[in-house]
Image (cartoon, rainbow, N blue to C red; front, side):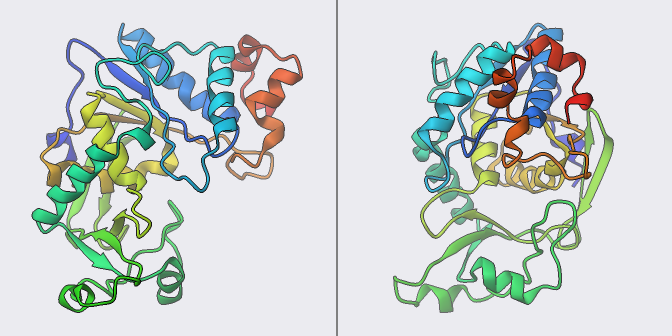
Length: 291
């Protein structure tokens, strides 16, 4: 699969997006990546869309949603569509977009792209030697690939996830606006991945593909840790008959130990930096010196 043939180039209107997940407070790494998205939209005279990616009910909290809006506004972000102002492709909160995900899930099932899987996360980790270093997700060993009839007869209390069947051996190629040409081999660099969870929650992979297509995003700006996710998502775009956006992956910000910033780095959260009386302008002038 030559991804470049399936990726749209921005037309008359550039549409970028900010897509934070309210599972913790936004930190300096989020801010730098989001600011890149903001600047690319401004430079092209385009629009920036804010989407609240609150899919996981066990991890997403209202306090983090409120903090997200406050922190983004304080930092100087401006968006043209979003949960707080609506827009032509509302709703902009993922927990309110379930009907879109169900429709895509049904299309994937009808096309034979997915299969039911009874393997738990623990089962998968036991079956493989190590996760793929690029994104920490172990390559699924294919345990349930050919067990469809057997699984369909299991009792209803058995937990079933639905996995996308990747075309083993196919090379997924795409051009990244920041990191140049990328390629990943299905079945070697990543395996069959979950698109619908046993608790009836769509996966990140499915939800962002559906939403970015529906909201007509022309370029996705995000961290380089999601490069392999882009390969997975290009397969979903193809299976669903959707046009993929362009991609721009940013280098990750790391702490002084060389570990990428995460929401556990509370001292570098935008909330903490604001409480230290730092200014957004000062932060943007000295990103790396604050880590």
